[in-house]
Image 1 (spheres, one colour):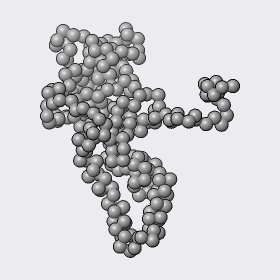
Image 2 (cartoon, rainbow, N blue to C red; image 1 turned 90 degrees about the horizontal axis):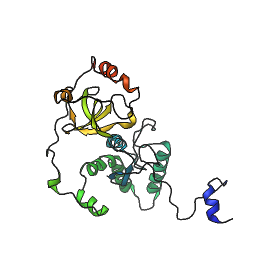
Image 3 (spheres, helix red, strand yellow; image 1 turned 90 degrees about the vertical axis):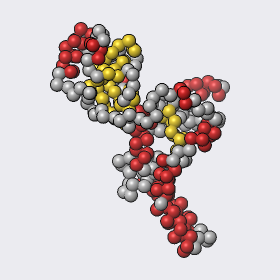
Image 4 (cartoon, rainbow, N blue to C red; image 1 turned 180 degrees about the horizontal axis):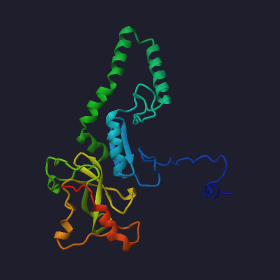
Length: 256
């Protein structure tokens, strides 16, 4: 039997991945392997890749609060005490490395003291680097070309975000741009809103800037002789949309 035949079955017991075949790349945040990793976050210790803008945003929030001193991953709720490591495994690995450095014949008391000082301040120095991201260096590393300034039409300073979670507004369905739907604010991040179309589910959430041209206060569609539509993939019968719309807006907090 040829190697190709064995490899195609994929069920041979104890089968080892063939030479030259790299492991599947997964999203740094959700570990999804089937979705293309189109979003990249450069860090001090390399690039982190993500399957969606949501994963990138959630990772960035967690990453800004602290990263594991051993593997540079985010520190989640089940981390060991101390909040400098993402797991007991990383804690033990880091301690072993520190012990080896301490036991080195070149390390005197002064060196040990200096190294301890460096370890204690590693998180602080790391954040200095993280906050002062060097775009020029990143462009060289990725051999990228910057978009010219005239391409950007938005304000130089991000607008103030006064939206709150659960506020209602009108938004175009990103999967069907001819439909204006009711959307609920389900998340706020800087000048961005995470929106969910009423009647849809969380798999179709999307982000918009607060000054985006395709979001409007409730009533905008009617004033312009339009009609609110159910989102693509509306979970109920289409005939129930008018009653669903009435119940959705009754007593809801409208975005100003």
